[in-house]
Amino acid sequence: MVFDWASERPFWMIGCGNMAGAMLTRWLAAGAPANGITVIRPSGVAPAAGVQTLTALPEGPVPRLVLLGIKPQQLDAVAPALAARIGPETVLVSILAGTGCASLRARFPAAGAIVRAMPNTPVALGRGVVALTGDRVDAVTALMRPLGLVEWIDDEEDFHLVAALAGSGPAFVFRMIDALAAGAADLGLAPDQAARLALHMVEGAGALAAGAGESPARLADRVASPGGMTRKGLDVLDADQALARLMRATLDATAARGREMAAAFR
Image 1 (cartoon, rainbow, N blue to C red):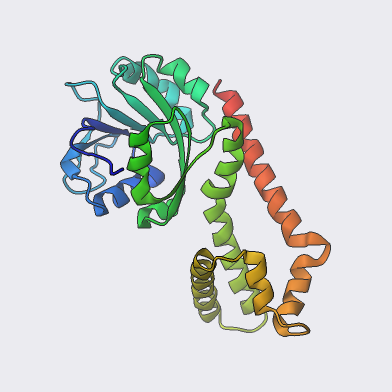
Image 2 (cartoon, one colour):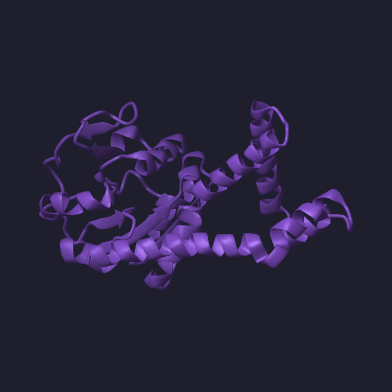
């Protein structure tokens, strides 16, 4: 199913920060009509050429689709005026971290459907991940497909962990790239060269893993010859499950913060 921009108008984006802006960038690159999207943001600055950008909600028809792209702490300031304009024809999609469907429904009781979405920043390239939960709406699935992999999560409680893995995950990968480059630089390689090598190595390894049809663990074993250089490095990562425990603790802390935020917005 392809998203029908003509029939789903008006399409409002409430806020357009880094993540919502990344989504908009990809939608426009994939053929979305700029004049079919209205952005409402305090600055009034258009995020892209041809996109109508306002500082207040427009007059006119009830929106068919609203994307909430504000900060979670701004929700209660925005909700009353927006709720008055949303009716049963409207699908509300929220990318607010830690804000559950029940909290959104309490603030937007007239919305026809409510969907939580958790995209990550590579959506700007069409190579991201978008996790969805809430009311299953085919149009929302179609809307998100140009952004990358789309996954519906049946149990909203699992959404905190999915958000930690897929939503926050790029930040963790960026840290790992930096750490690899810094390690090589500390051992004597020129820092700029180490940074280039680390970045392109991760880009190629990720592409290989995505298309290999084998698990990353199996691919690692293919690289590591018994008694060789790679195996010695893996021995460090695998000792006492050091890397696995670090990743688990990282995801656990991230998901726990999501649950704390959800509790605060109930």
